[in-house]
Length: 384
Image (cartoon, rainbow, N blue to C red; front, side, top):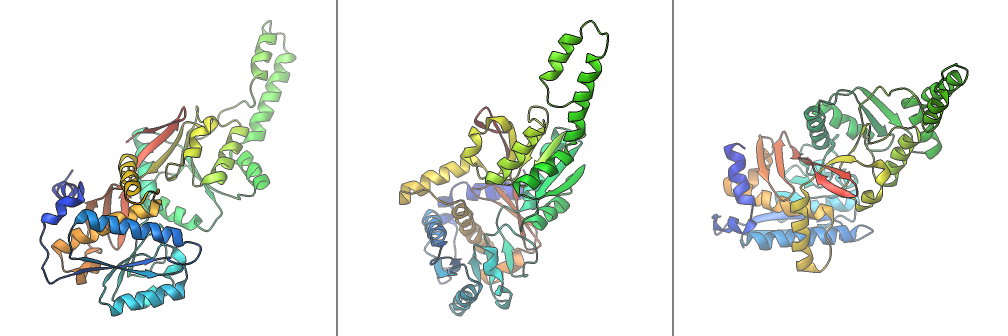
């Protein structure tokens, strides 16, 4: 751990320690907050507002001022609220939450937005993606593959709206790709595609041919051999060692079920997926275990959940943890730079440690150094 990371780790290990730092008595740290306060996503916005308030309380410095504004998850309303923040002298904003709210924000060139989206394609220069992006996830997957000397990895990506984000993450991380496939999430089409990817029909035919060959042979042990073969579903090796599935929820389960149907088993091949935010339903899917994925630091997340619950008697959203960390980041950077010039800091190489883990900043991008976990025997186990 280099000297910079050690210093920042010390600062972020407990926000209360930050209060010993000094900020000019007349200088206020104005932080805008663009979240949905009305509409279908208002509960997410409320959780983020509470998390930001919790972070300010933990920092315990009255120089911080938070200015929440509604986006209603609409681009026009987001622009209107951003303009109001600009008129109030705000220079740095946490939010918006959703990618569709970013459309017109390139017009607000005097503001820097730390959006909670994990999408990074085609972002205006004044918007920094603070979500758990695909590059961060594939960097972690690459580390796992290399440490385990896994040479042949196939990648399965659904044909959905985040397909190109996944491809960008694969490219930026320089993860070694043996073969790359896109699939249709419609069940009947998916099953057919997985059969083709795994050469299922050929391997099934190989088994039938071998049973027939032994039956017609004069082998004295043929009955025993036939019984052993009849317990199998296919015959013949697979030309890959691991499969990375860029999917979530029920769609992820559909892909893994199709792999099991084609006689691809997690005890023989590594099943790896993207950040699942510790989806507890996966613990009960014993047939697809062990299942591996990158994610934030679970221990820190659990501590944060307890802190949040004790304060508000409810569970936080995942996005609220991001916003909690971003308040600490802005405060830390303001101690070392003019708050009005924070946009320049995000262009330089920098690192900091929050509740999620270590973040790396460079060229207006935030990447996360994630941990890696596996689910096995209905337990979540940290690999690194």
